[in-house]
Amino acid sequence: MDEIPPSTPDQALAARLLELATGRVRSHAAILIDPAGSIVGWLPGAEQTFGYSAGEMIGRSCDVIFTPEDIARGMPRWERETAVRSGLAEDDRWQLRKDGARIWVTGTMTAIRDDDGVVLGFAKLLRDRTDLKTHVEALESRIAALQEAEQRRVNFTSTLAHELRSPLSAVSTAALLLERRADRSPETQFAVGSIRRQVDFMARVISDLVEVARSTLGKTELHAERIALQAVIRDACEASASSIRQRGHRLQQLLPEAKLYVDADAVRLRQVFINLIENAAKYTPPGGNIWVKATTEGDEAVVKIADDGIGIAPEVMPHIFELFTQAETASKSGLGIGLALVKEVVALHGGTVQAMSDGLNKGSEFTVRLRLPPQRPEG
Figure: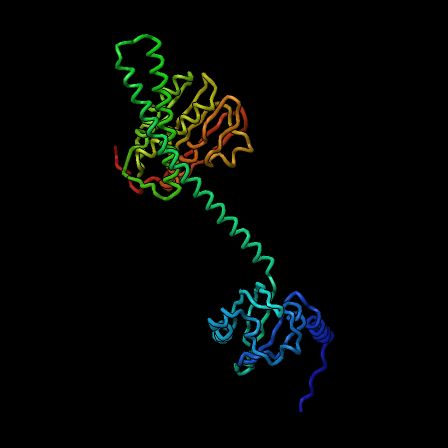
C-alpha cells in the first residue's frame, strides 16, 4: 500500500482553519443534503439562522425550511434538479425559522459529485438578508406611493386645465363684444387690450397644462414629418415677438442658410421653442439680449436659446425641468410648466434638452438636440 505523504505546514493550517471556520462562522448557514433531500449536515451557522439544533434537523427533509407555497410549487425538488443539471442553483426566497418567522435568504445550492460524476449530495449555503429585503420593499412601497401621488397630481392638473377653459372662453367672448362697441375711447381700448393679453397668456398656460398631463399619461401623439428647422424657429420667434417688444429685448436669430431638416411634429416643436424664448424673455431684465442659434454637430441638429438675464442658481439647476419648478426671484412668478413641457416634447422626438448657467446674473443657455435624418433633401 502506498504511503500517504505527510501534510505540509500549509495543508495542516488549511485543515485547521476549515475545522474552526465550520464550527464558528455564524453569518452563513451551511447545510449538507443527500440526493433524496434529507439533511445530513447542519452547521452552526444554520442553527443561528433557522433556530433549529443539529439534533433536530439531521435526517429530516430540507422541505422544513421552505414556505408552504414554495413546497406546493415543488421548489425544494426544483432546486436539487437544477443543481444536478447545471451544477448550481440560485436560492433567493422567503424561508421559515423554527419560530415560524419568515426570513429572506440569499445563496446557492451546489451539487457534490465523486470522481466518476455521481451525485453524492448537495451543499446549500445561505445568508439571512431580511434586512436588505425589508429595505427594498420599503423603497418599493415608497415608489408606489409617489407614483400614486403623481397620478393624482396629473389627474388634478388635467381636470383643472379643462375646467379653466370655459370661464376663459367667456372672458374672451366678453372682450370681443367690447371691441365691437361703438365706444372706442382710450380707456376701453386699453381695457380690451389688457384682457386680450391676459386671455392669450392664460390660454398658453392651460394648453401647457393639458399637454404636460397628456404626456405624463402617455397620451401625446406626434404627427412627424420632414420639416425645415429654421422655419419652425422663425415661427416661434414671431409668436414671441409681443413679449420681446413689451420688455424691450433684442432678439437675434443666428441661423444657417442651408436648411436643416428634421423629422418632427412642427406644431409641438414650435411650442418647445416658444416656451424657451418666452422663458428667456421672462428672466431677462428689460433691454436685455436673447439669441437663438442653430447648427449641426455630428448627426444632430443643435438649437441654443441664450440670454444675458438673471441666470440659474446652482441649487435650482438639477430641478429646472421638473414640473412646477421655477427660479426664485422676488419679481417673477409663474407655475413652472413650460420647461417641464419642453423636456417631455423633446424626449418624445428622441432628442435631449440641457440647461447651462454660470450662476445668478450670468445669463443662461438652453440647448435642444434633435437627430438628423439619414438623408436630407437638397434645397
